[in-house]
Image (cartoon, rainbow, N blue to C red; front, side, top):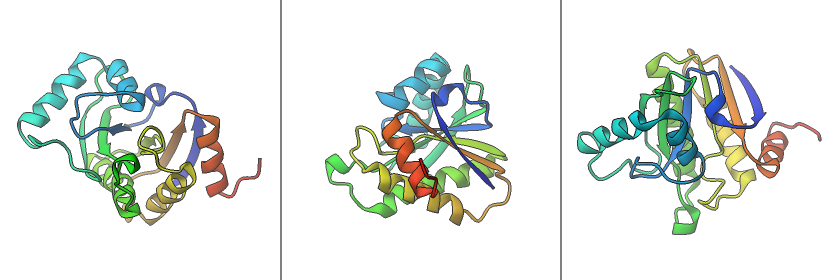
Length: 172
């Protein structure tokens, strides 16, 4: 499985699945979540509302993942996952690992060969970017599936991109 680092906008990636760093409501928010909802169009919000009415009436639990269509995005699917919020006391690294690992498992179930991840929980949720990078890369390396050919980490800021480069052993 190839791992690539891209600095830019996850909503423009031509991959089978993009991962949304969602909040548990699944109804949009700020950061990556808001950007994905805006770019995917109103149908994404309607699909998420349907999930809330059926499978997740209390919201998507931290570390879990669920897919919807991607609608107006170049991707085929959006995989929504809720990372732990360190600012709310959710500091267990296992929850963070589960967000990445469960997203990969959903992608595998969908038959996705390519997937793009943001730095889940490294933004307003307060996790250290270096910890997120190490956890994300380990989750990818530990993934038992064989269908995913390429994983992109699409990173918005220089600071987070540097953390991922360091975790991969790149020298700036």
